[in-house]
Image (cartoon, rainbow, N blue to C red; front, side, top):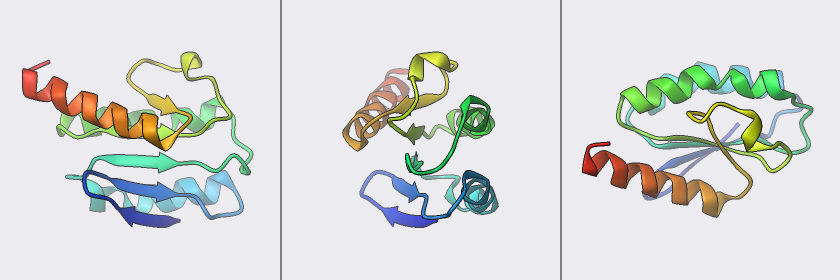
Length: 110
């Protein structure tokens, strides 16, 4: 797991050999990022299916309750196959755009 601090968010990228290893690493460290907007970048090299992405749904809901954003970055899945409250996008630019839009929504009281 690689962690990169950006100005407005923390980017966590997978460098493990399997999704299960990456998921375990993220879940061990997730509480360290309570106040941070998070982007989780899952490598297309990892074998992953829809139920694996759903493991992040609870984190997404917790982040929203805390007033922060959570986005999964992966281009190998169709985001329309998932619940609306789980942001999955194919590019880092789109992930940054989601963070910005959600910040504006919070400021406007949505």
